[in-house]
Figure: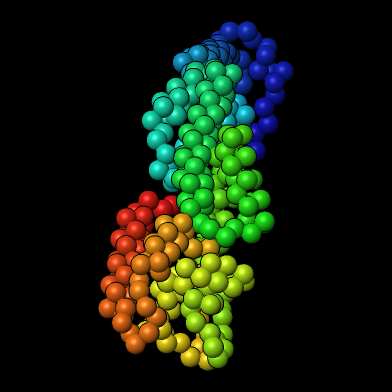
Amino acid sequence: MTVLNFDAILIAEDGVNAMGFNVSKWRSEAMNKTTVLKVGGALVLAGVLAGCAHKKPPPPKPSAATEQALANAEQCISQAQQLGVSVDQAQQLLDQAKQAAQVPNDQKAQDLANQVCQQTDAATNAYYLDKARTLDAQARQYTNLNSSEQSQLQQGETEIANNQGKDAYDTLSALVSQLQSAQSTYTVVRGDTLWGISGKSSIYGNPYEWPLIYMNNADKIKDPDLIYPQQQLNVRTNPMKDEVDSATNYAKTRGPWKNGQALSKDHAWLNAQQSKMSNSMSSGSGGKH
């Protein structure tokens, strides 16, 4: 193995030293390699810097509060649409809010998003107020309301006056549902007549309303002049005013209570009332929500 003697290598600055080593060539090659390394490094650094100079910064994003406000506005519109409420104006406001969020202009976007919910809330309240007024008018057509039902009716009307649409709707819809379904059962005893039953204070307190009992038990009573002990008669607690008027008017003009003399008239009146109720239910079924 040959051991290089650097002292010998460095004896001569140029030319070939005693060991035959070409110092000038070695120095030249070393300088060339150093130059290449420096140039290459400079080029790499320049490329990195150039890439950094051309890379665009990410676009600014809206704040979390703005994104939440937009989400709330979307939900407000969705809830209004489920009721069938017009949301055209609210949708326009939401579009403007989204455009402001892209800038981003957080304050403007949030203000517009809040206006969306204010607009849909107002439209929804108007929707429920309209429904509540209809229910109020309907509730006032029922008779024999007890003190609790009267109080509930007054509460609903107060809520309408205070512009509380949803509260008024909930109060009055519950009341109307209760009035529609309220009924009691009366067991016939010997000597009873529809006239006498209707006149009881626990029933209608008016004997002329007996056709209401007949109408509500048409499947059990074939002849209003003939009822039998132990029969279970269903009595509507809160008949409507127009039904009461029709019943009393018919009772006053019916005629005698014997030998089925008025039976054909009874059937004609009953059929007319049933047809009227059927038509009323058909016309009202399309508007429910």
